[in-house]
Every structure is written in structure tokens, then in C-alpha cells.
Length: 277
Image (cartoon, rainbow, N blue to C red; front, side, top):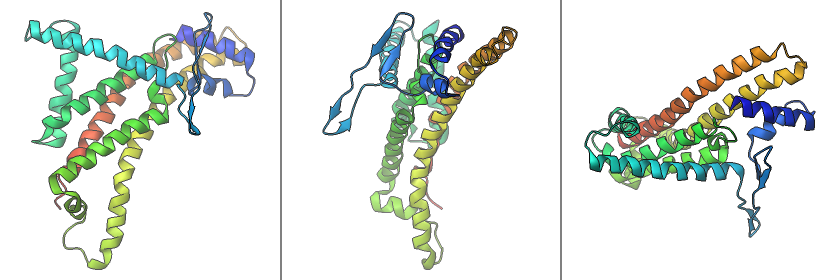
């Protein structure tokens, strides 16, 4: 990715002179996918009843993540049919699946964890794939788009509330959020606080993932851009060296952020299902 990043920076510096504007141009979402020097793919812009439902760069790479994941997971499933102890890549995927099931879902949710494992695995592998796609040449990180992360957080929010309401009932769920034995005068205030707290959880999920993924790419572009800002070849080894280090660190961050989103979702589900004070 560093070589590809350097090429993009050269083109951008020639075209832009508005400070860090060129960095945002390549990190933020757009209606085109750059394949320079081979060209640019312009994506269709669609408006329906005044609502913009255009296909954007990050949506395309979210679809690519789906297309990549499906055959991989089918391959792993078939590997289990041939042998109960798969080898190679299938064994690596099995390690991740068992980790999410036993160390995340089971520990955070409790005895009813199995019904939530499919969702947690879907979230984990989708986020991980989107994160890794941003590290390949011409790739983009869909999870650096707040709309993508907010959508994921919304699904988590629905699963969290559904888990709590299924156990306590709709009325019982909201009643269980309030501690026992508190003065009646404080009940309205505490209910408002607890109710708003339901929405802070998905907000934190969305912003945490978005901010962490966009930060790494911003740092890489900035480091490579130092070569052209200082107009000196002497700064190149330092910039490229640090960019390579951040690039390797981003591989680790890709796994960590997928883990954090998944474990927090599992924890919030567990909290919603164990509200007894």
C-alpha cells in the first residue's frame, strides 16, 4: 500500500494546494474509484424521491468484503465435511470462530450465548475484511466511513434491545433498568438517564471504529506527504520507514478493532440480559 500511497500523493500534490485537503480527498468517501494510472471508475449517482442513494466508493468496498467473505466461509465449511480437524487456512479461520464463540460470546453473554454467535461472527469477519481491504493497493477501508459504522452499530443496537426485551418483556425491560429501593422522586430522572444510555452504547461503537480506522490512514498519507512538503529526498527514508511501520501496525489494528466492536456488542447484550440490581 505504501508504494500505491506514494503514487497517489504525487498526483494529489500536483493538483491540490489547500493544506491537508488532498489527504481528505483520498480518505473520505466519493463517487469514483481511482485506479490510476489505469483510469477512474465513475460510480452511478442515484436519487429517489429526493433521497440520495448513490453508490459510493466505500459501499463498493463493503460489497467487495461480502464477495470475499462468502467463498472463504463456504470453503471453510466444506473443509469440515472432509475432516473434523481442518488444516491450513481453514484451521486459522476455525481459531477465530472458536475465539469469538468461547472467549467473547460465552464469557460476555452467559448461558444463552449460542443464539447470538452467528451475529457476532458476522460482525467480526465483516469488519476485519473491510479493515484489511484498506491495506491493499487501490483498496479503501469501508469502516472509515461513519455511515458504515453507524449502520453496524444500529444492527447491534437492535440485537441488544431485542435480547433484553425477550428476557424481561418490553415493560419489564425498561422497569428492570431502574435500581430497586430508590426514592420515587428520583425515578423520572434515573429513567431518562438510563434511557439515553441505551443510545450512547451504539454511538460509542460507531465513532470508535470510524475514528480508529480513519486515523491510521491519515497518518500514513501524512508521513508520505512529508517528502513532497519538504521537497527533499533526504526525508524520504524516514517518511517511508515510519509509513511502513504504521502500515504493519494497521494490520494489528484491523484485528483489534474487529475484536473491540464484537466484544463490546457482546458485553452490551449481556448487560441487557442481566439487569437485576
